[in-house]
Figure 1 (tube, rainbow, N blue to C red):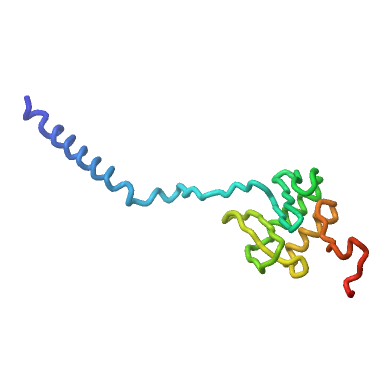
Figure 2: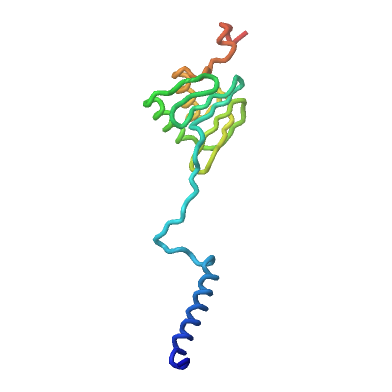
Length: 149
């Protein structure tokens, strides 16, 4: 009776050995070509954060503004601000002002002086100034003094 089932018995042992070898090698094998590898997705905690000597102004992912001033940016203005934020590139010139933002690689921080800001950064600062959330006027211009003294 054992001789009758010997071929199936040997085949089952061979299949078990092949299964164990395949299981042991699974880490070194590439996945199927039709299955894409998942990419790390950076989840931004805020759209923009502007820090100056007076404090920090944060614009949230849905247009809420907090920090120096509180409020909510309208839909059209927020879309413009979000498009401008997508144009930002990491790179600092040094200075007292800081601009934090996210892109597909993660969080970044640019430092700059207000007078020497990148055009994309200046566009964002001007938008926030026009909306009334950011005061860009130097202290000597506020008090009515002239620059040349």
